Amino acid sequence: MRYLHTMVRVADLDAALDFWRDGLGLQEVRRLENEKGRYTLVFLAAPEDMDAARSTKAPMVELTYNWDPESYTGGRNFGHLAYLVDDIYATCAHLQAKGVTINRPPRDGHMAFVRSPDGISIELLQKGESLPAAEPWASMPNTGGW
Image 1 (cartoon, helix red, strand yellow):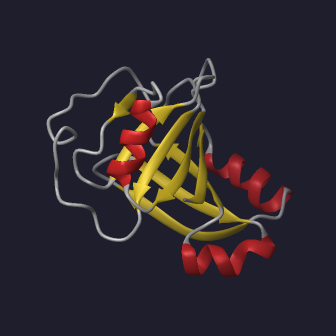
Image 2 (cartoon, one colour; image 1 turned 180 degrees about the vertical axis):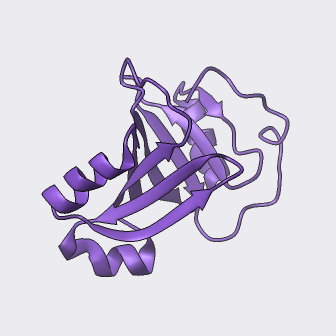
């Protein structure tokens, strides 16, 4: 398993960049604008992490700016922690055996979401190519929120 990023939703991208980039000194690694989804993602890394962030896409902070205004209350501005795993199915099966609810099953063989006992959302991403669709995951519905 390898730590990837922490996602934080921001209400004002310019103000957020003024804090994270210009204030704290993080550097922009990459930016993704998604017109269909109406959001912008900006990935930032600490100066000493820039080489790793460029080559392995970790460790970083992901600022998510949703173009449509939204009030982030109750901690909703904190999105999730993300980890890259060797086998997403084995990881989810292990967590499920420990009583963890798989909130967003890895139906696509690539991505799943679970929550910590304290309600922190964790994104699990398959290392390398997505695994072929497999049961019970392929037909498992979402449960709760993530």
